[in-house]
Length: 366
Image: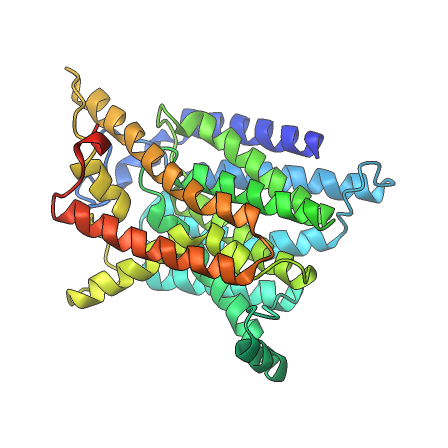
């Protein structure tokens, strides 16, 4: 896995450097009036191109090594190609949106739905259980419900990662942490092939972060966020499906931050009579930027915005670790994982309301 990680990291970092050098021309298409824009200047949003290149190179190398005797016991066969094929519709659709800004939310949702359909058909993904007696009996009696849950996960998680992709290093670091946590448990249960895919994805993400944090020279864009969401969703479902010891609430707790951010955002917009597809600047990370990370002084305006941008992400990294640590400690204990999910939801809503009502403790302000 070490060589796969090295290849993923280097290819992604190299291609990302090329994107920064040669793709600056498309950045002006991203309007200055976008409510979710919190940077000055024109920055390429094609980080997904570099991520896809690094993942493809690494997974391809793993498949070749496995075919040549599998000296590292990677167990990566031709099925890896089906993973890449399922990933492409969502990834390419996101990249088209990043380059043109003309692909509507409806078409992007259709493309991630196509990716979900391919994942279900080509990989046989299904959620076999929920760790509770009555739902598990229902899933056993109606297996198509498990297929529907897998389709929902692969279709929806890319958009959840796109929502939290607002500041330098935010979505990328969350993706890296989640990939490594999933890989750790996969190794615990002896699923080396899945661990190899996840470690490679984490390494590719690290190659992207070289350019993204803290300098903010390249953004992941929709393409990058969709790649993270699709790979993590497919790996989460596969881990639970292939390993009965792993609770289905383990990946749920790992991903509760982007998932709940999405659910809460939909509720918040519907309550205001606004379409969920309309972008705004009221997400949790945006409130932290505007109301907590304020004490930044610099003569250069762009430098001042960059410094505030970079200081926002660590708050959410810490928020993510509050769910990752208990998930890793109790990855096979369903009821404990469910309790931590509920605790996160309560904590998130309380923190959101505190920020909105200007009741944040002074020690949290920077």
